[in-house]
Image (cartoon, rainbow, N blue to C red; front, side):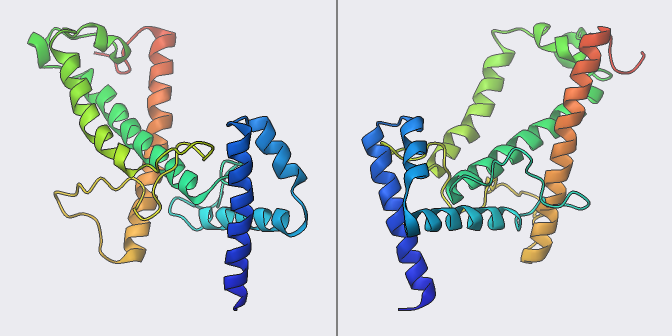
Length: 226
């Protein structure tokens, strides 16, 4: 048996022990944590090695950018499974895309507002109160629900005692199979570079949208003068 096979088998034994303990605990996180602390010898070493492997994997994903490099001050990637890591990346991409759209929508919507007779002339953080709830917002909810419903099938089934909110690892996080303009490069290195650009712009979009909302809440006025 090779060294890799031995390590894989040992890792499976460690995870089997942890899964059985999780089932016995009824999902009590304090009992699971106590079991992990009291794991003995090789099994504990194997579990720590698996955590290290996930951290190393996270450090190679798109989005790691200098000068910060791999930046995880809260330690989200140091104590999770690969499925959970995929979930975190999916969440980051979705919020980043929403942040970019929100930042653009604030600037455009406050200066160009043809909907509903062109009467929406307020700071963007108040615009939702100006639209007819009975016609506009149900359509928005339906448009958001369609891709979210399909995304449910990319999650692992939440079995009793297992880790919740984990994604399937045989897919690319954030890939909605939607590229009508054919912008995604076929070369893996170029695709990773484009994904890094998307993540960095999404992070900036989230910060920008939060800043715009904070400014309008503080001033009560639109971002740009009329």
